[in-house]
Amino acid sequence: MKLNQKLKDIIISPESTLLSALKRMDEVRKKLLLVFRQDKFIGLLSIGDLQRAIINSIDLNTLISEVIRKDYIVARPENTVEEVKKMMLAIRAEFMPVVSDIGELDQIYFWEDLFDAAEQAPVKQFNLPVVVMAGGFGTRLKPLTNVLPKPLIPIGEKTMLEEIFDRFAKHGCDNFFISVNYKAELIEYYLSSRNLPYLLTFFKEEKPMGTAGSLTLLKGKIKETLIVSNCDILIDQDYSEILDYHHHHKNEITIVAALKHYPIPYGIIESGDNGQLIDLKEKPEMTFKINSGMYILEPHLLDEIPDDEFFHITQLIDKVKDRGGNIGVFPISEKSWKDVGLLSEYISSLKEY
Image 1: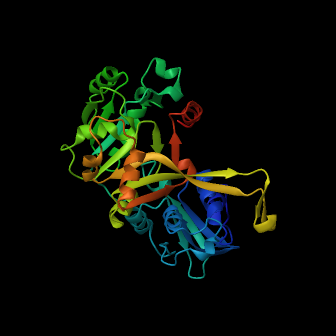
Image 2: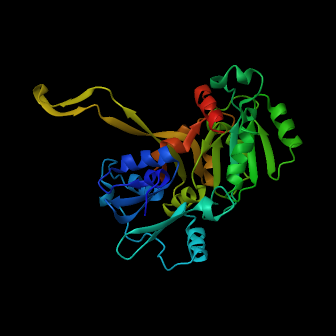
Image 3: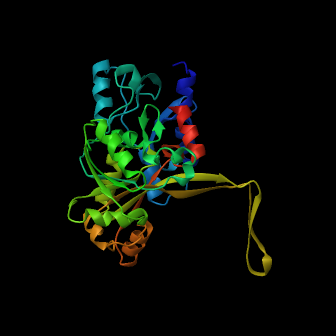
């Protein structure tokens, strides 16, 4: 099969590293790659494969060949287009390669070629309460927030809050609790006038209470697993996969963490006793997990937040950690997270929209 640029973009060698695969996915905005050794098809590598590797503390410099699964799903030349469509729908695949018995790529079907919807729906639907923390002053977005509160800053043809609502709605969520403070009346008036197809409950901090303090106002009102999100982040991820991870590991809190890569433009030296050289790495790249601002919580944690106190969610996390509770970290790729509460990131996001 002749390779066009679109196809070349999603092909990677098994001798490439997991880090290079993550970067490639971000670069081409795909969450699935074809793994080829020269002209021979080796398998498929998904963002889920990479996330599981990170969760299991596998080094990102590990080769793809060491982690690639054998149980991938591909179509065969004898499969009809309708059969291929059913296969893609079942696993919500971005694309489906048609591979011969001898490992040759015969054809490839992309989602947008076979389905009307521009993007595939999440694999699973769920309907859990979502708490959006929208009470901040938006100081990082000044001077815009001198006029509009941060949750109502436009992103494309919507406000930030509406974009967040719609992303959760794709997964089946329609019950939103909105923590407000700064310009609360304007936020409530605007959303009420929009007649959105969601149940919106506003709860107001009478004073700034930190990133978790206002959650005490929901005690007794939420009695199931809940999702908490900042109002200035956009996350491109199947949320049902985060929820599955949360429940599978019996976590009390799951933190969604975005990977951030920082190249060091110098040689890094590690030395030991008497200043003896242990290792020298030339211009290494360091990868960190960044707290994205989205969490999954079990409802009993609302009772562990002190009433009428300034209390950050990081303090709640420390509290659970100190008593030995399960706290999970679910990784997402660098460009799957946008911090649109930062003016430069907001402007960058506007260009994409």
